[in-house]
Image (tube, rainbow, N blue to C red; front, side):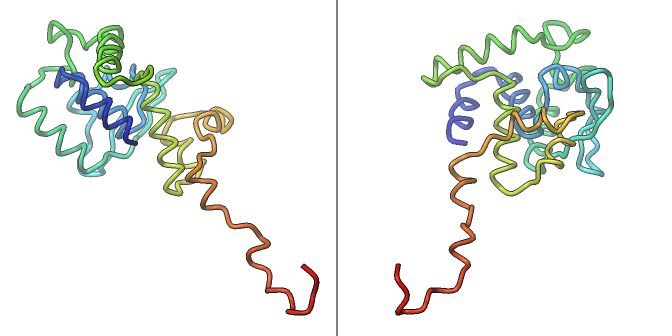
Amino acid sequence: MEEVARFLAAVTDPEIRMLLRTIYACGLRLGETLQLTASSIDSQRMVLKLSGKGQKERLAPLSPVLLEELRNYWRETRPKLWLFPGKTQAHPLTASTVQRACQRACRRADLPRITPHTLRHCYATHLLDVGIDTRTIQSILGHHRIGTTAIYTHVTLAGLSQVISPLDKLPAPPADSPR
């Protein structure tokens, strides 16, 4: 998580930083994030309404922290159509603009390559670390197959440290038994 925080802090453009915070906060794909509008935010149900891969609609949980940040961002920028507009209000930011900003932030923070997809991967891994089950993560990420989600959810050292061996639950051996 520390690297994610360093990376996001190194993004100098406030609009792109907000876009990347949105990706990390909700586990979004870059393409989904670029297509967000103000109407994508459902603050009553605390979800983002997305048009994902293959134009499949899905919902992503909306962090209360992110909602407040998005509200402040909207008040400051007043985007007309796209939440993250490009050079003109008629078009969203481009993926290449965001990717270049990521490269600059990595150099600035002296970090290895971090992309918007890396943030999605970190989101899934961090959810797994706090005990969210793989099926729920699959649904949030919009994966059709659980095997796709399994790629994101590699076992971390934090996860391994939570495993309790069945041996630890056995009653202690009698004092006179060999060890």
